[in-house]
Image (tube, rainbow, N blue to C red; front, side):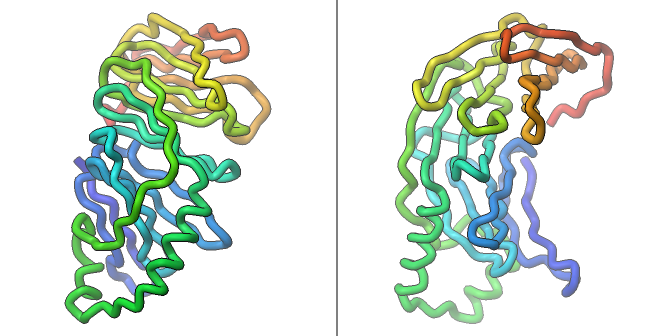
Length: 231
């Protein structure tokens, strides 16, 4: 398990910590109305931490422990993958963050010095927890999800895990397409978010990088015997 740390370079001090982050696949970012937020998952919680105020809302997933996540800026969506293979699409994230911020501001609750000092420590017990955003559930994987990635336009998502199968999801309909027999547990899926190509890079834990053409749902080439990080 990892710990997410927000470090203020100018002040040379730690501003925020989120403990028990399962892996590097559980961290993302999104910009809302000019404010950058770190998005992190810890166990069943999803945190939004403003890099400006070091505060932000969080919610709890009723589906189970989160093993990975992905964020799409333009669509305002967050995907979470879970330990038993479920995938949750969390909708209207900008609207949710804005509404929770208004509720936090109108509550009039003043933090004591002890509460403020708590921000420099672990944040798992913060009281800024709100009702979760609207969610759509998808499920095909029977084992733990290892990685999720959006397509460039946010219409599709790609998932992989212990089955060694790359799954492409059409988010509007839930229709699935598959590239099976990737050769091992999928450790990371990365789509081309900045170009027009329909290529997805997939790393598997047998030390192989695969390039998949998702327009044809087939592997184009692979490089084996690379030294890959287990995370």
